[in-house]
Every structure is written in structure tokens, then in C-alpha cells.
Image 1 (cartoon, rainbow, N blue to C red):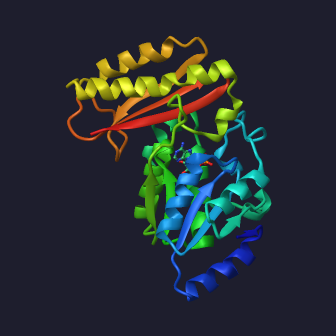
Image 2: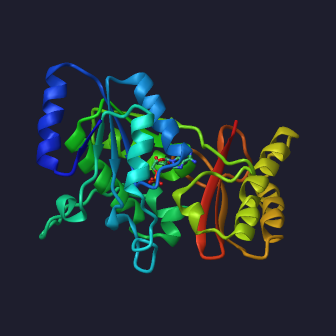
Image 3: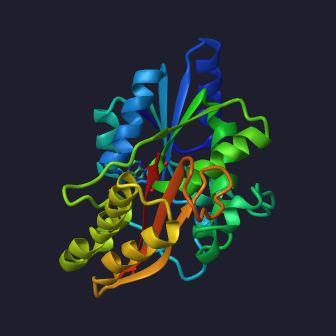
Length: 280
Ligand code: AMP
């Protein structure tokens, strides 16, 4: 396993790999890696000949007042996890390497980025699609791996790759959860002990949605209001949104007939958490 910090040296390595006709799998991350990230790396290891993990806390996807400065980091531990999971190349650029002085180009997917998380995090997805485009151009992956945990992000990236004819397969892997059902996230480290217990209400509410659906309930309004009751019981929880939408355009669904995405964003104390399930 080798660590690269410069785009130029990594690009040189990538062109060697391409010459040897090895397939490249890319796992983009912001570090402070956990079992969710590990599941993506393992899948990339299975599928491809060369696994590249990027670790970059992308300033462009944080809004003013968000947690960019305090976002958790532990490169030593991250490298250990990558090594253990069999990654070949780790790309850890500095922000000025990715966005040198005078940087002025951005990629924006319209429409679907203005819904759900896009409402309370304007500009967030523009930062994501810009950095992912750069990472694709630098690492030239055959397959790139994303987590269903960030469901809107995965949908936006797929749309971007389709619209811009990017020659890369986007694979989306299931949400990895802790024992109490809480979706793993680097940000969970912000949660106090009691907040962590309360944070389990997101998945409790999502499980309730699935149960109601399985019992035949198709009215989204009814499902959402029962989910609200579950989360509102927790004193530290403040709901940003609970939505039932289609999986392409993220349009609200009133009566569920086909596949539906149930997505939630909740602030628990000062920590914003997201989670989702698919009803099928
Ligand atoms: P992040 O470091 O939070 O930007 O996440 C990097 C990638 O890992 C994204 O594609 C996430 O969706 C994915 N990921 C994060 N948490 C999980 C999880 N609990 N289960 C599956 N994938 C995850």
C-alpha cells in the first residue's frame, strides 16, 4: 500500500496501472474511517485489480457554520484500516492541492440537489460533485463505490455520471449500522452517550415505516406522521425532514405504488444525522 499526496505523482501511477490493464476501484471518503467505509473497500477489493481510497475532507461541501474545522481526523488509524482491508493506494491531498489559488470550476447537478438535504445545506452537493469529478479525473476508476447511507449523494453522483457521459460504474453499497441500529458515521463521534441512545430513534422510525408498509399502508402522510411521533419522543432530537420520495427525481410521493425512498435528517443535540430505507 502506498500513500500519495500529490495529484501529479498519483496520475503517473494511474497511467502505469492502466497500461497494465488492471481495473481500478475508487472509494472516496473524508476519513475517520469505520466499518461502513471498510465495507466499500472490501467490495472494491473483490471487484477490481487496484483499490484506491481517497481521504479528503472537502472544504467545498461544507457550508458556513458547518463542522469543517472540527470534522474528526485520524490518518494513522485510517491507514491501518485501509491496509487491513487490502487497499493498494491511498490518496490524501491537501486542500490547496485540490483547489489551488484561482480555482474556479464547479460541477452542478440541477433539480435533485435542491431537495431533501439540499434545502438545509445549499451548495453542499455542488461541492460533492465537483470533488468527485476531480477524483474521477485523477484516478480514472472503472468502478466507484458509494454508500446507501448518503442516499441522495449516491443518486446525484449517478445522475452526474450519466449526464456527463463519465466512463465509470457507480456501485452503491448497503448501510452499515451499529448494534442499536444507528447508521455508522464519522460524525457519530460528536454524540454524547445519551445522544447516541436517542439517535437510534432514526432507525426505529425507519423500521416502523417499513413495518407499516409491509402491513399494507400506502399513505405517505400517515407513515410520516407515525415516524414523527417516534423521533419526537427524544428530547434532544430536532427533525430537519422526513420524506417519502421516488428514487430518481426525489419527488414526494403521496400514495406509494412502486419503489419509495424513506429518508430522514435529524439533529440530535448539535449533530445532524441522516438515514434511509427503501420500500419495495
Ligand atoms: P464519508 O467519509 O462520510 O464522506 O463517506 C464516504 C463514503 O462511505 C460515502 O460513499 C458514504 O456513503 C459511505 N458510508 C459512510 N457511512 C456508511 C455506512 N454506515 N454504511 C455504508 N456506507 C457508508
